Image (tube, helix red, strand yellow):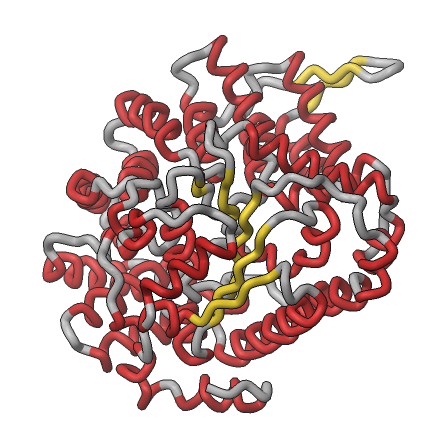
Length: 504
């Protein structure tokens, strides 16, 4: 994020037998070659105690914590450093990033504002502040900040993409898109933001041919930047459903934490999960927490505690009854730090669909709501978005169709195993029969019905997903069969789904 290079000063590293002096570069190369994350993080912390000036090493440490979703640790460590140096730009930046990753945008804003005051002409800081303000619904100021970032750095793609669905001047942004595509290098990572922004703006003007050309190029560019093998994801999903079969579940029944507070919302990306979370979190007893990585993190934390190694199929069956309960306990402890005083909460981490069997054992009284949607709408919805690193399959039709088929197979297995634990909602039914669907959802969650749940667009909860601007609008039927606007261009996606045996 922010780095000050120190080319001459050497690190002082004490070992059992001697004191060694070496450069930050040498240490960083050694760390990057290590496979043991726990050891490498502990090693960095020890070095930083004696070498607090080592900013490249500190950035490596912060970035590893953020990448591993160890957000509480990152908040704690950056906060410690800010107590000593309140104006440290690196710590301000990563503290804010961790808070945003936790869904706590309000607490990130003051740190981003402080960082902005320290470096008012830094485009990365300006874009980060604008993005956080956009999450909070402050679109006018966010738009001005994105505009400033683009004036300062005309080739910088992120603010162009972030601004594209709230822009007050689409004509100017189309000129900026042309500029970036003409003046950036031919490297894919320098072009895809402009193409995705071009798609959004051209679509808003009804220019679907130009819009799709941008979308196709943007996806090709983005896919070229990724290292990804879909077979690995498919194997994870097969392993989980094979291990957590009916016999396994029966033999481990009654071992989890009995809290009824969690409401998990799962589905494929762009299936309508944000809308469902808005509906439920409009209830006075429910806190909407968004896409938090806590359940996966809690599972990994307990796995590491018992030093379980190997593939998923090797270590998961070796978890004892006490460990299943411990996963639930650790998860709820993490939740307690951010959930406030409300008695129930929603967790919308979409990848939790893979872990429904684990959730059933760890939190048997939780509720799980699965949102399903027309295959073409949901797959095209993915193709037209820029995602974080969890959704690498969305940039090519063959991979997208294969991932969707694997997801449907996984969910079919869970529905057979847990018919009363899991509620399935059709997005189309939700939109067409909104009041009844809302009533059914609230009833399934064992909550008293409240009329506020019928007006999710009035919910002022922070939304940090790609739906941030959409959820502040009333519910419309225009999202159904949206893919047909591009039907003439989507034959390859239809064919890919057909090869996977998916009806649409």
